[in-house]
Length: 173
Image (cartoon, rainbow, N blue to C red; front, side, top):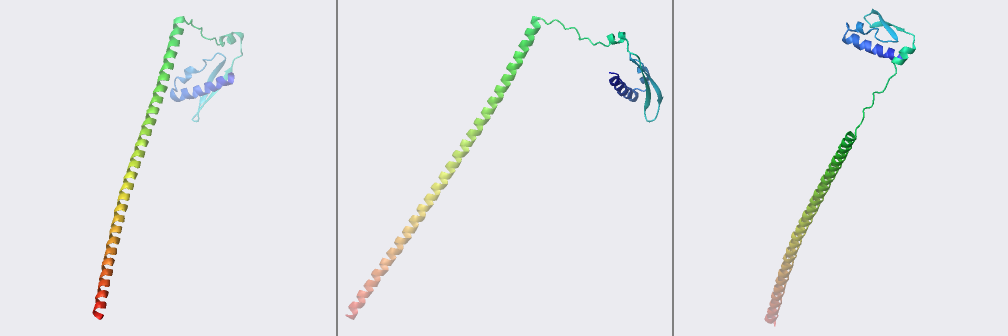
């Protein structure tokens, strides 16, 4: 206990000497079981002489720490505290429910947005596929028309060649 008090005093002394150099002298000697006297003041700090007094039964009784008397707590005070605790609990519960509702709303919004994006993607893919199929059908029809036209031209050419051959045979015969 004495060592702790000496540490307290040295810290207190240091703080006081830095902040209030003139009031520092008044603090010395206020402790019941020790006397403190400044020896001399130096540029590097201050020196003190600590003189411990012998303990006496009277001084021990003075150091007994007594607990402050408990004040009587009335039933009304207890009821008020219980009601305040219940209000805090309800408030906290409502806050948790609000947070959960906000989280649920956010999740629903995210889900709706994802569904909408998926729907848009599906619709766009279907439209692209439809356009591609139409182009393929047009290309196929164009290809078949071109083939039929060439076939008809060949048939015409073949008929012409046959007719020319028949005419030549008639002329030579």
